[in-house]
Length: 96
Image: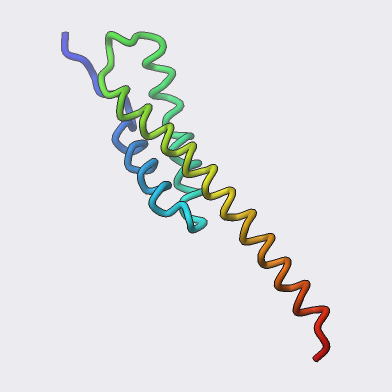
């Protein structure tokens, strides 16, 4: 019996890679969240019957990279908010 490829395994891998590459922009955060959401169905199917499916390595790698991309994107967002708030605070306290 031929093994089936897990659904969205390639898409999750591509989204995980893109979330790392674009992690310093807000795009990486969004792509990482989409990658995590798409990996859910494939991970459930693989846990039910691992012998029936192929491609779990790429699905899992994409899932892990998506998590890292979300963390990096979140840290970048917090950094931008803090720096932006500091700059606005400095600008509002300086006399014109």
